[in-house]
View (cartoon, rainbow over the protein chains, first blue to last red):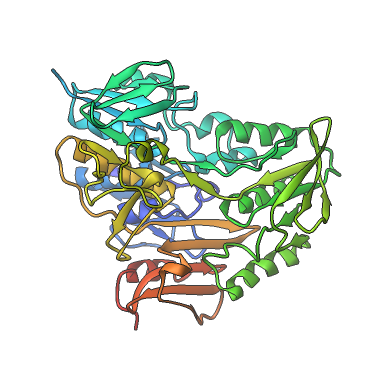
Length: 86
Length: 387
């Protein structure tokens, strides 16, 4: 199933907790902000928003990464647009 | 009879621990004892709220209803006054003695305070502090003189908040430069240059300060050398103290923090610890230490929750934290205490400032100032031999 992962760079402070918990889904850029990855890669370049095909286990890791963000800078939506987090 | 887990401290470590326990055990009793009167909120979001980036309600990470839904007894506005590890109870501020089967001490820290207080003296630790700063700045005349005292994370936040509010704060540093226990003089100079570029007045080595007030309202401060600084807003960020007193009173092993093993078990039977108050062995840096950051506290909360229900938990990733000072990005990765390192040196990079901490030629800590290009690379190198 596809999920939409969004990072708000205005809220992100580069705490990097998402990166340590879900390194396949997040990385830090030179602005010290989290960017979204698609299984460790950045097709079509770096981005704060990405639609990614995830298994239930991968989704759990992404949600855990989002939950770990101290500034609630990460949002996760399912294919229907339903907000899964926060 | 079902077991009862009592958690002292309703911050991120305590709440996540409770959440994890409930996820694995639908029936056990869970009690959180919390001094503040709010549901869980993010301290890291307080500067965003004060700056007006987010509304107040966005700082909350849980609602009051959440605790009831999870069948967690949330004793907010309540102090844990005494613990008995022999008889396994916690005495709380209304005099009740609550029995426990397992106890988690997640009491965290409290900010160091000045000896005196006055209207206009602010801290930035609790939501109430943030409300106070916000209210002050909402009614602040454009010409108000503002002061910031301290050289750490909170004073950086105060500088950012005040500059965003259109002020020109004067920075007062007790010692020499920012983070004197972490940064080499060259790193301190990088931050000094950032302040100079924005024409911020800085006074270093001023020692302790004395509040000058009139009718209980701040008028300025005087330093140890008798120099005066005028201001009606003073942001104070002079560090935190760990809330270890409950553990000390029952002679649990306490060093800087409450000592715990790899399973977060303290020296007392059935008593665990997590979060900023916990001192654990860090496999990434080879030293028992406190971590003192939000993300690590959250992960430790999850870990202690798992352990309370009899599950094992993986080694936590290296702790790191970042902030900025007037646009200069700052990242601390791993163990960045100079006195705990055998060697501290600057790594030449094309841009920015990189300072590394080595023990037995193993990379145990990194500080980056300005340029974050190498942050991921250095994080991955932590715990490895430096070549």
